[in-house]
Amino acid sequence: MISLDDLLVIDPHDGGSIGLAKPSIRRAEYVFMTHDHYDHNAFQIMESKERRTGFVGIFTSSGFTLQGIQVNHDRNNGKSRGKTSIYIVKRGNLSFVHMGDIGEYPSESLLKNLSADVLALPVGGIITIDAKEASQLVKEISPSVVIPLHYWVKGHLMPLDPPDNFLNFTGLQVYSEREIDENNFKKGIYLYKS
Image (cartoon, rainbow, N blue to C red; front, side, top):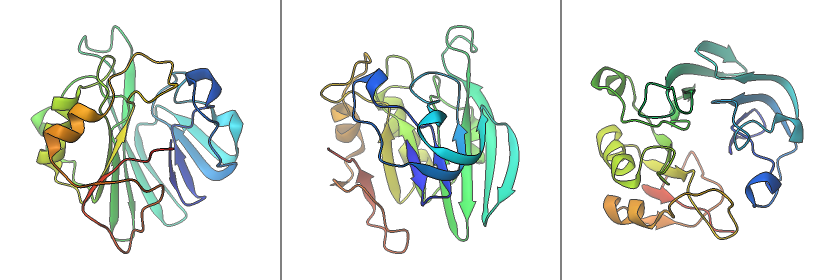
């Protein structure tokens, strides 16, 4: 789950259904879910003014703009796991890209539209792109901050790979911080460990 202050939350999970602690965020103006799978759509855990699932298009409100682009959740044109959305969020001079549960490497035409100060992407493979593909995306998009998503940690019930291979492939500095100060980025990977 990613949160932009109390304004926007992307892909909330309920904790228990995936074997992790329940997130502490209880309210957000907007909740956007990249797709309607149980580990991304627990909007009921928080109060919100509005929520959207699998959004495609442009949404503007409260000083931010979100663009949703539909992509495949698998390498079988979406026939195995369906579709997911990539969300490109811009607020002021900050650009943030959430890759959703992208299951195949993006096309060259899509990559041309992806630039980000902050990039959040799945790195655990199995049901999304794998660590090697994720590290290649980091190289191509070249964000200042990378937030790994959708990987195995102790207690997690989903069959995913841990982030170790991704961290080794990128070679970037790793920070164990829960929050990122948008006015004082330290270039690298932010891997929160509870």
